[in-house]
Length: 135
Length: 112
Image 1: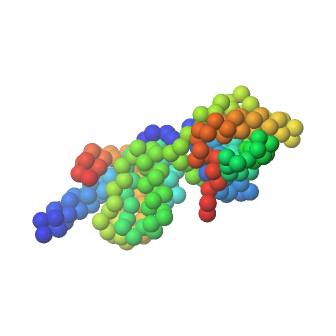
Image 2: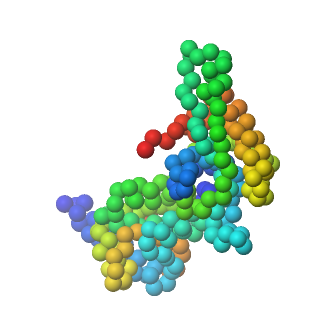
Image 3: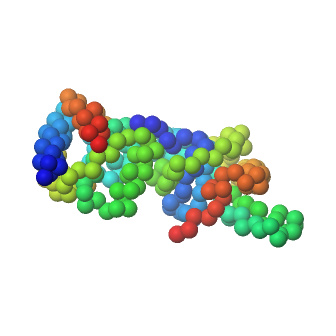
C-alpha cells in the first residue's frame, strides 16, 4: 500500500553484469516510457566497492583504499531487490535521463557520483551500502 | 484442543471470505503478479500457502513489510489454496487488490 520504490532507496541489482551490487534509486519511472514499456528506474550503483581501511594505513593508502567505482543504469523493477535502507545523496542533478545517451555524458555522470559516494564513504555513514554483499 | 477448534472455525471463515473476494473483488494469483502488485502498491492483503518455498516466502514477506501490507499464512498448501480460490490449479500465493463485498482485509490481519 505504501510505494517503496522511491528515490534514495537502496536496492540490490539482481541481473546483468552488475548482479549483486548495491545501488541507489535516483529516479523512478513507474509506468515506463515509450521506449521501455515497463516499470523501471535510473539507479546509480557501485561497480567496485572500497576496500577495508585499517588504522595502520598511511594517508596515501587510505586514499587508495577508499576509492569507489560507480555505474549508472536504467534497470527494470523486476531485476532489483529493494531493501529497507536509504541513501540520502543528492544525485538528481548529475544523474539524469539523458546522461545515458552518449558515452562521455555517461562517464562524467559516473565520475560525479564517484566523488559523492567517496565523500559519503569517508564520513563513515551508510556503512551497509559500502560493504560488499557476500553470496 | 481449544486452539484446534478455533483454527477450524476461522479456517472456514477465511475460505468463505476468500470465495466472496473471488466473486466480487479484484485479486491476482501467482508469485510474479504478487510482487508486481506490491511494487505498484495495488495489493492490500497477501495470502501465502504453507508449502511455499521458504526463500520465496521470506521475499514476499520482505516486500510486504516495505509496502506495509498484511500477509496471511494460509493454513493449507497450494493445492488447498487453489481449491479455496475456486480454481483447478495450485496457487502458492495471491494478492487481493480490491476486496469487493468481503471484509477479509479488516478481519484477517486484525486476528493475527
